[in-house]
Image (cartoon, rainbow, N blue to C red; front, side, top):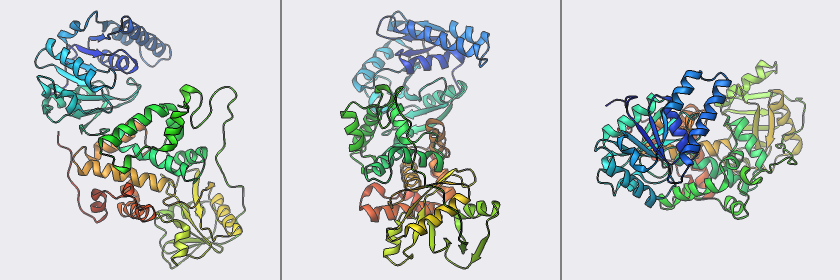
Amino acid sequence: MGALTSESVVGVVGAGTMGAGIAHVAAAAGHRVIIFDQDKGVAERAIAGIAARLERSVERGRIDEELANQTNRNLTAAASINDLSECRLVIEAIVENLGIKRLVLGEIEKMVSNDAILATNTSSLSVTAIAAELERPEQCVGMHFFNPAPVMRLVEIVHGAVTDSEVAATAFETAQAWGKTAVHTKSSPGFIVNRVARPYYGEALRLLSEGAANVVTLDAVYTECGAWRMGPFSLLDLIGLDVNLDVSKSVFDATFNDPRFAPSFVQQSLVDAGHLGRKTGRGFYEYGPDAVEPEPATAPDHGLDKEVVVHGDPGPLGALVDRWSMRGISITHVAGDGLISVGDIQLRLTDGRPATELVDVGLAPPNTAVIDWVHDWVTTSRVCIAAASTCSRSSLGTLVGALQAAGFRVTVIEDTPGLVVARTLSTLASVAGDTVLHGIASVDAIDTAMRLGTNYPSGPLQWAARIGFGRVVEVLDHLVAAYGEERYRASLWLRRASQGERLTRRFAP
């Protein structure tokens, strides 16, 4: 079954920001769209808001006037919910309350045709539970748009336990016809994006609570080393700490308190204080005309006055060696186990163990530092390192100077397990791996969803494959050893991938 034809009427219930955005998308795709909201005048205001946005888009040359006019003509405000009776597809975008969603969809079901699709835009509730009290639960499917719907490309097509496969296929093809990129997922806590993304916030909050670095420094490491578009703390402030915390609690509760999804006391305390982010003028950052933009911790300039020696195959750090060579810095190559030395200090790519631990167990000399992973050694502007407690200040300065000579800003954080990017990517990949293992979504769907729904630079499993699944599992195993917590357990899917198994199980809609 293909996409709905443009002659099919689409209904949208709930004319808030998301409902209006979905109506805009459907109308721009050529459908006649009927918008209903229980509060008088809200649907009309939503249509007026869409018209204003279309006018601005015409003025900026993004769309032509003919498309804007046709989109406006396609929008109608319903006088009552009964006006939705002719709709072939109805999408509800109302409050995230299971009882209310069941009630509204049940009412709509009675007035539309038997083959009409009943879609929910829920971001956190079970589609199976929403559909459970319908007479035709097989007609119910999740169509989870991302805000703002006219801009964000991703739509998660969420299969409830009894969703008809043709219904899901029609929803998928229709979203694609509307210019979106759709992905299939089974109904499960958080679906894809809100499930897999939890460690991005969770690990940043834990690093902050442990004193690894301050907020602005951690955000800089995430954006400059990890190439994430926004750091977790800036993003939390934008989303709203309360909104994000509610999602975290929902996923934590729905997974029967899986420690990987545990909410943070740091975040809870800010919510309790009313510091919710941009909307209240204060969250992790302060906002307003008098707010001072803080600067991340960056090491002062040091000169390079020692020889750079590469011991054996440096692995991923080979790209760092290339940056030195491109800048005319002499490199000496000797046999060894893949580390780099500058003067009397050794540098190793983090494997999850703190530098101090490597020294304590006799695997490294006192002057040792570990360096965090980066998304792309060619383009990154900053590197993050941590030194063993036994490392001298002068030796650390020597290493900082060498890294600066390669064109990096250097951030030195506390010697914490897994540093920042390595522990965050590894935990993201582990949750993503379990999402594949449990048949919730495919590898491609997960990587696509995380790139388009959260603007990740690469999908977590794609990135993990590039780094090496074995390295990811190694970091996770060392995090388990450091913390003694199930939070860092490696997904069986990842462990098998690290052992070279061909993992072909995919979500089959």
